[in-house]
Image (cartoon, rainbow, N blue to C red; front, side, top):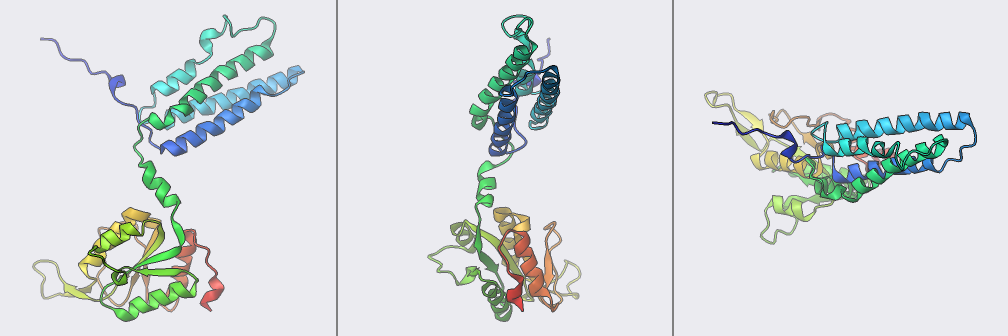
Length: 285
């Protein structure tokens, strides 16, 4: 009984970058190639330079098409590599005119790249382009504040945001209209930064060590923290910790800022600035 053969080429080739990023880069490569074709070549030295620049441009294109897909030997790279060479010695080769022959080859490569750009939106990508574009379009004037039961910490955080000239969005205070906090975050879809307050609201312990209770934030705050990271990106969220409380160890790469430190406001302002907010540090003093 014969075995079924698996053909790797039958699998759908996917971009490992966003369609938008891929299309932008291909457009840039097209412009550079067009500049090569438009060069006025009147000497052997200029022809040699054109050949060198073409080799560099073409080599980059090949490598880019290799690295941009989950399959390095993908059909788009192969199509580009083959472009033009089929015609050398036929209509693409101009005897006695190496300049025109080289420019014909570049034009075949350009035609291939232009076709690829035109259909780039149809190529499947492993990157969620919509989410990427949403993050790029986040507003840099508003700031989420997620908090527990500590009213003083909440007011301190809100006052800092206002002092810096931004608008705090205190989620628990927003008109509910029957919405959960998660739904409220969704409704403010363009807010660019979030502050999560870890304050001593609850007590907890590992099972079997109930005698060693530790202060911790409310569990909904921890959950909303994780949701915010997924929504607007890890670099756009920081956590303020007040007191000796337990912080979750299952949210990786989190920035925790100690509110007991006299410089906590400066640290938050730096995080906002790093996130792209127009922060005037002089407003803190």
